[in-house]
Amino acid sequence: MQARIQPFFPGLLGIRLLEATPDRVTAELTVRDELCTVPGICHGGVLMAFADTLGAVATVLNIPEGSGTTTLESKSNFFAPAQAGTTIVAECLPLHRGRRTQTWQTSIRGPEGRLLAQVTQTQMVLT
Image 1: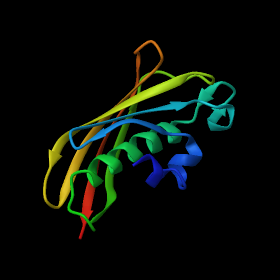
Image 2: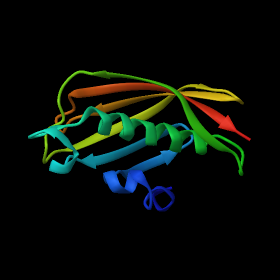
Image 3: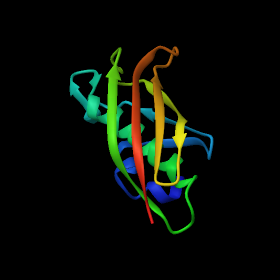
């Protein structure tokens, strides 16, 4: 899966998949200055894109070969800033895995385990 996402936006962000199974996707991302909106603070859109990537990867792992996916809905809650120079970790778990839609919840945590953001998204399965 890492090779599939590397040439695209997730590769530009620097997302590194740690585990990718049909039941759980985890990844890490190092917060670089160019990903920040103000000095030292990661842009919220980066966190959303991080979670969106994991939800898409998880969906791909749960759909028939040759199918695709697109995000239908995404909701983000931000709890704390992600600091430049740190590596953040995300875990994506299923809430619903249906034939036409799948819903995933991604928790993004800082280096000490503090919850930075939680994203819930629904993916549509494209046949």
